[in-house]
Amino acid sequence: MILLGLASGCATGVTGPVANVTPTSASVRGGLKTTTVGVSSYWAQYGPTTSYGSETPHESRFTNTGQESFSINVTGLQRSKTYHYRVCAADSEQGPGKELCGRDRQFTTQAVGCGETVTANLRLTGPLGCGEDESGPIVGADGIEINLGGHTLTGAANPISRPAGIVISGHNGVTIRNGSLRNWGSAIALRDASATRIVNVDADGWIALDTENGTGNVVRRSSLGGSDAGVRTFDETGLDIAGSEVSGFAVVAMFLHGNGARIVDNSVTVFGPVPAIRVEGSSNRISQNRIRPGNDNSLLTGIWLLDGDGNALVENIVSGAATGSGETAGDGIFVSPAAPGRWCAPMSRTRTRMTASTSVARPPGSATTRQTTTATSASPPCPG
Image (cartoon, rainbow, N blue to C red):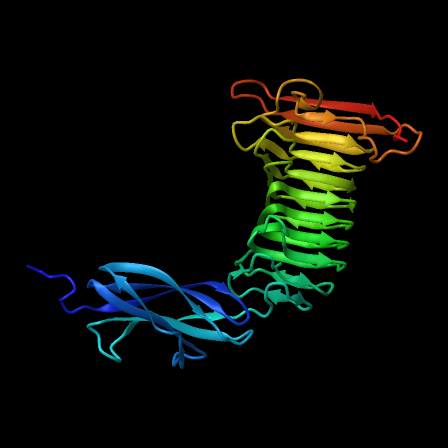
């Protein structure tokens, strides 16, 4: 008969990656492998070299044979410094100095933490998670680059305060690139910010890109997904989104309020019977986008043009549009009069003009029709 726990054992630490890196701390993922049942202890050694020199408090747990996983918090670190680390373990059969450690790994602490202001180029050195009411980095200078370094900037998505992942207010020419933003109120919030470039970014939140009063902001090769909207703009001029994916759930995929936008060659998806792209403004070009529902629901409409002048809708492919009339028109594009109190002049009649060359997707085996139409809609004068 073999009595588990009485035989000589051997616990070994397993060094995993860091899960969260701030300017002064890191969360280390680790594991413990053992050949016996009983109490084992584990800890992390860390320092500027492979001599380490520091270690976390030893923690104990009852373990079974096999491997168990855990996280170890390393605190009291210095900003922008590289540390070596490894995870060590021992059980009751291993005497002092007989612990077995995992392989050496490294991380570098962040230069800037959650809610701190960035005034020079920043590159994340690892994943960064922020607290419930904390925003991510706040841009405080023109012309700098926020390089996420292939890492993820994560928020707590407080439903009341809805903090933003990256905040740019009143600064121009900023580039955000190469990484992910997860679980934010607004993943990227732009206020009075122009010439921002967002490149190769995967962002989600209530709103992925939320921008107001900017000019010439650009999105390329990115994925923007929001539980409310993927993109929301207000009084924006010249927004340029191309070669990207945009999705929305509860409200709309893209809400464009402004003039001169260029929305070209994107994949646009909505989850629920809501509009995919809603446009209020003039001289916007919506072209060569692929618009579809993300589940079994039909689109309320693919493109919903509320008002403005000189808007061009060209060669968009709309699939899954609801049948019906009005804003649920079956070809997936609807032009409506100006909404009361918006974009209309007192005691005058504004005109909404749309030139559309639209490809409407048909079921397999049926023809795809392409139509070119010019629609004009007159709106009533502003009330009061």
